Length: 88
View 1 (spheres, rainbow, N blue to C red):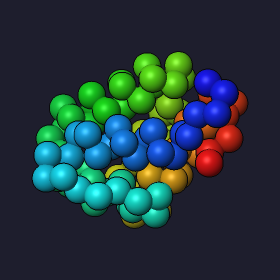
View 2 (cartoon, rainbow, N blue to C red):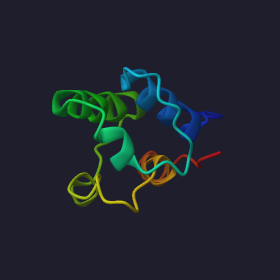
View 3 (cartoon, rainbow, N blue to C red):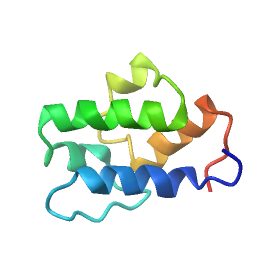
């Protein structure tokens, strides 16, 4: 993936699911986004993220993804670690 901006790509993918044009920043808690999405959209997003980055997100993250401490940056860092990329 080379120079891929993992955080930027993750944010873009999250924003594409938000119908209300929500602006997502690295420190945006995912809970704020998930509450605006249908559950099937959350599942679609996870599947798209895993496919885009060629990874499987850890079950422990997915089980706590709506906790207040999980942000877009946290998700990007996990994706970067799983795909051996560094978030930028």
